[in-house]
Length: 143
Length: 384
Image 1 (cartoon, rainbow over the protein chains, first blue to last red):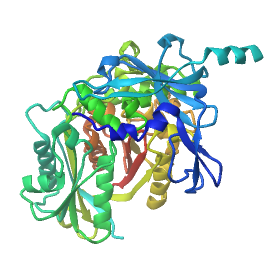
Image 2 (tube, rainbow over the protein chains, first blue to last red):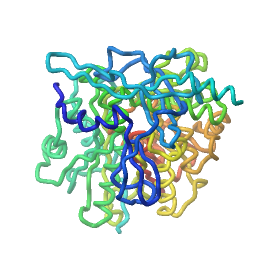
Image 3 (cartoon, chains in turn yellow, blue):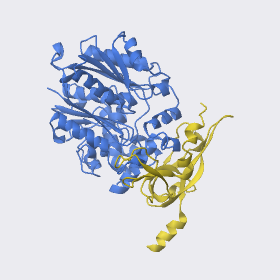
Image 4 (cartoon, rainbow over the protein chains, first blue to last red):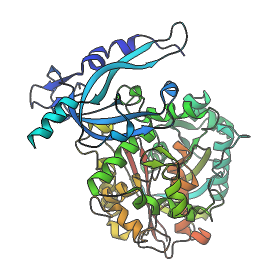
């Protein structure tokens, strides 16, 4: 089931740079970007690059993976509350399952998401989130 | 709008049906419902299904099922809204009869899940969520429910065991339902020792992969002919939506579509939540049960598990739920579940639920959800 490049290519700004958008009418920020503002239904936006920093809102570890991800199971995924507001869902990386805790500082990194088999198989890259030790220490020092 | 009644119900047992395909299951259920309604013909057929293309390489279910029933010629179509397809199909059938366009319709929910291996089914089910931003990141459907459950436990200071009564109740009720997949009671010890699928969700928090079909025959209430005595009227049929992706919600701890469709349903039926005698909710995962109880107005925010703890959800409680086993133990053949719920509520309101009969059941509510409740379809049924 070889997939075309296009559906991955057209999401490149989102997957590699966490580019969303901001509504010019009400200033609401979105990731992923929207065509119609979920807050005021405005249709004019500027693109907006998120910092990739945030806090862990929730997490789990998947023991059985959907097709295409079998080779990576078990793996942890989470919801990250970005500092600019939106929640984003992603795989978590560079962290042990038992260290994960709600509220932990996280940062975005670009990683391989999955690899298709076969000669024409795509290697899909995108964002994952890892523990942001530096910011966690700073925050703890402030307390 | 014309009043609409349910004059017949039918269902196949929920199983791994190795010897039957999607078409056989659907036809079995419709034939049983037609027999129950003492009728042979309908004007239209609505097929609730989510994944026939992905799991059985078959779409165009309307024409297929009409043909296999020997009814080619009637209007027929598939209705899809992920795991809420069954409820949506009944809603479509209800509107068709209420509008006056059709006098009598059949609605069948069907899902054939066991023809592919589990990884492909898991990938298929993930299509209920956002393909580009949830499924593409390897987040399965159970994964999304686990993310919700973990946060819910954190916000309301709960542990896994607080959810056990939902699973125990569903399994206890399934024991006496011959059509249920798991006819075995579960103990608290078994629940706490169960393997985690996606922590904090364990095997006993999750509904199974299975096959099944359920059907109802809807008719104008004004000409029920010989069916008047057993007819159950549809007092409300409502539907609402929420953001498809969990991450797009302002408040991921509140099922907005459940709230909206419930409020609309109470208004349409002219009742309040206190009038409901039983509630077939969408317990695909334990976490959905308390969140549904809250958003549908039966419990305050964060207190949905208390109803279960206090025994209020059992057959003899204040608000019996999953009375024939629910999605958890009757089984959750995805697009069929919403129709199973209605079939079971009809059994209750007719007084034909056997050992699981809710005493004096007059008003039943069913709620079929799609995705992480991005779709909610609510029905309120009234008996005699």
